[in-house]
Image 1 (cartoon, rainbow, N blue to C red):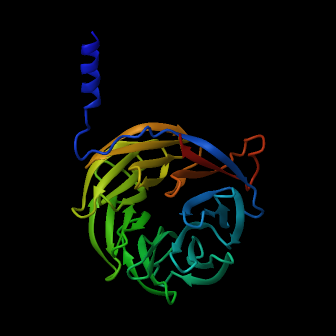
Image 2 (cartoon, one colour):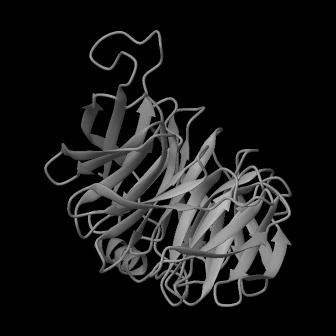
Image 3 (cartoon, rainbow, N blue to C red):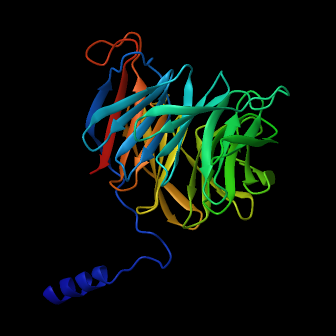
Length: 345
């Protein structure tokens, strides 16, 4: 009997995973901190979140300013007031400069990240109805250019980050969603209206290719996996679509929650996260191998928390949501935002 048990144990211990497949992790996340952001003058709505892991800073775009949170000390470090709705913040590495899109004025605010002061503004609008209502903004390092993605005019504005001058506009063929840069001269963007992803050459300011997301409708959030060369689009029909940007082709899709407006990828763990505002959840997805993805777990967050950022240094997730009008208790009131920090168990 003992001999049989020993043989069984040896057999179990010798089982190895198939080559080329990543090891699944538990994907369990828990809330480790909750902050109430009662910053005066800031209305209770949050757009995109931008994480600077090296500086322990989270930039929260809100209805009339940028809230800067020190994620290490768990406190508001400052507020950068703006005259109009802020949609997104992009950072310029090594320069201590940030950029915020201001929706209705059609402006980009240039921010000194040391002083948290606005030092310049860039008008992205033209008399030819281009550059209207900028939302997402991306800094492309090889060309040192900025790209804003404009909702009303359905185009992209290219800006020289050294001179703050507009270089031109790129028609996208529809209303854009979020965008990312691959660090090698290409900028990718969802086109929500046409259910596509476009690849933009930062150097020539032209669209290099475009392809349908196939299983997705209304792609919004977008993340890039540089190691495996994959793009991840969260879509309004509760699907996450995986694309190969080299082939210009959608490869797979995974079910997620409703109301997702952000997706984050952790390159060290191979985990994907979708923030589902209508469900108040975060979908955690495991990357097992090439074009092989599955849902590990669904984690509760906050209703309305559709935007999200990941700290790649700590692997912590951050979501922000406004309080509902009928909310009672310490998380109630107009102009109150609640930020959750979630960490792996």
